[in-house]
Structure formats: structure tokens, C-alpha cells
Length: 78
Image (tube, rainbow, N blue to C red; front, side, top):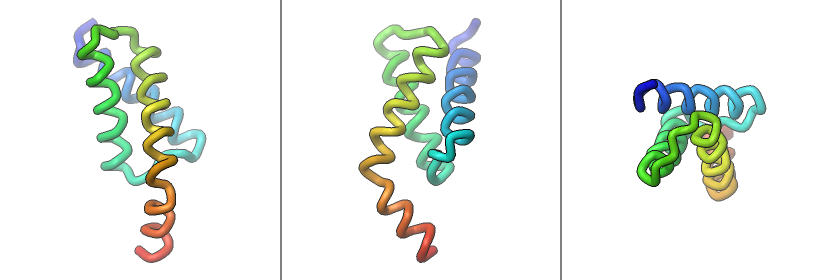
């Protein structure tokens, strides 16, 4: 499997999990956080899709804790 396929699969797994749980925030920011986390894991040699996805979900949740109030304000006030 190519790196591209691995990244796409890991991203899809993480995105789907967060979307189904209702945790997904703004799409552009969410995608960037997930891809940055996947890229960081690739740089240290991780190639397992589920590990990449799980680490990306953990990174996203940590990011969301710091930014949730800003997302809520943006949703309420547009």
C-alpha cells in the first residue's frame, strides 16, 4: 500500500469517527489538525493506518479542548 493510500485511509477513519460522535468542528480546521497529526506520525516512521487514525483523533480532541469555546461563539454569532 502506498503512503498516499495509507494517509487517505487513516484520515477517513479519523474523520468518520469524529463525525459520527458529533465531535467534528469546522471542516477546514478539523482536516488540518488531522492531517498534521498524521504527517507527524509518518515522519517518525509510523505506517499502520489504525495507529495513525487513533493518534490523529487524540490530537484532534486535545486541540478541540483548547478551541471549543471559540467554535461555540462562532456558531452562535456567525
